[in-house]
Length: 145
Image 1 (spheres, rainbow, N blue to C red):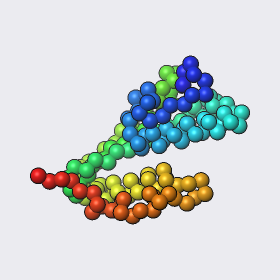
Image 2: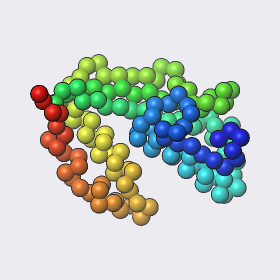
Image 3: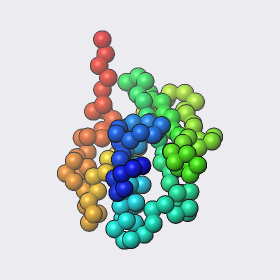
């Protein structure tokens, strides 16, 4: 963080143009962890090679109906000239339409993200990640009026 050596900010507190979401905080945490490990090992965190390869991906699924969803994604990269994360050219994509397939894929995406977040250093998972009820499609209901 500029002006605060050794301070790293992720998630909703970050001051970039990246979306504020759990998925983005997870991606930012990986960049942050890489910087911290490098600092602990006495390595530079501002090498041209590292800065050129700092990338985060924003993915978002949105349920539209009780059985259909849509999605969008964007890739952000570090811009050395501005010192900011910026949207990479031609990286913004979205579903052509909402569909049941996107709805099913939304749960697969969520299962993968939560399994990664809940993975322990030894490769096992927390009890939360092992609970299949958390990721069942039929457990996700939209209240109908």
